Image 1 (cartoon, rainbow over the protein chains, first blue to last red):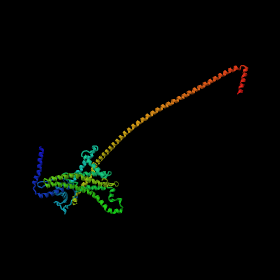
Image 2 (cartoon, one colour):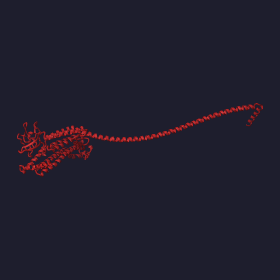
Image 3 (cartoon, each protein chain N blue to C red):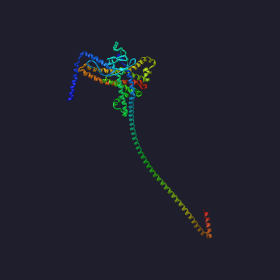
Image 4 (cartoon, chains in turn cyan, red):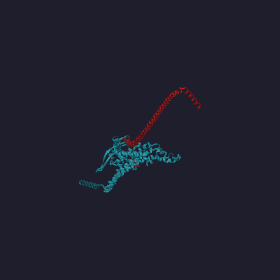
Length: 373
Length: 166
């Protein structure tokens, strides 16, 4: 009897705590809201970008001094020779880092070369015009990639080992992942590439599926990583798909691009049509992976923006209605995002397999698109 | 688009490619290869086991069918053997009967022939004895009749008379 009662009291106290906090707010409400909006917007923008230190959270104390909790990461620059130093030198973008007589400053998570005062010059569209040295830093995203890669190695190594130890039956976490591996093999690789060639692509397809999925899932954690929502990451993945597709493309694949009509038309007829058709086919080569990279980037970025905006609404509304509503909404969106995390990994893998299918498709096999309808 | 280009980080791109390719190679060697092989082996094993079970079932059916067939054959064979034996018995009996009859007939015929021979010999013997006896009797009679001369003449005359008559 006493316990539920105590809980209720605590709940009521907790609920009124917010009101008390609101009452002690010093700044006027209108101005505060505008400030807050820009702050949230900047925070979201900052979060979407890669970062040179691994920050868990930051607080601002009563004197307006920011405290950051996390750890610095190594910065590796190519600027007239290799420059390696710790990102703690930037003091979270607040100070100019001086290394071997060069001055660097962080601006919107990017490193610019600057002078001792840290001047940043802007062009008309508010982009800095300072020199950006080649930045090979181990950033937060790189750290997350390393962690994900390590996790995958451990996880799937243990799955591989469990087969040997348990007479060909997976144990532990492998029980969960084995059906997914089999699904990718049977319903993505074999279905799109065919029995004959699928084995060559299995390693890539499995790696990319789990890599994207795990990184998407990490993006859902409060760690605040957004690796798959980074255009450089998705470009790299898409370019790998592009190279694999075109390097493994067979005769039929190239014939389909440069001679799509085949014997269906005499050469003088082809001449006119091919002037339009072949450039389109060649463009298609690049559009396919480009669509891959934009789709993943846009989906993950949009998800993060929506989710963080909804969470930000809690701080803007600061009311009895707005808070729970935002919480409910962001909770619902979180659930959808969990699905999207899986879905985007699936779509990327599926489309990559489809492109590989085009590349290895042989003439007598019939149309791969029609085969699997 | 400006934002996209501005956000693009060559370093991250570089690391992504390096790490990802490395990850593929490592996973291929240590995870995907063994996993896919193990799964493949297992599937092959299941397939083989199912096929073996199916085969065993078929063999089982074959064996049952075989044994039934054998049983039927054995039964038929027994029937024919019994039948043959009966036939052989009948034949032997019939043969024996025939043989003994022929033998008997032959013996009877021999006996008859012997009897006939004996009879003929006896008759011939009797005939000889009768002839000699008749001769002796005739001699004695003739001796008695021809003891006188007239009687001899009378006889010659009688004989000549017979010849004339003839």
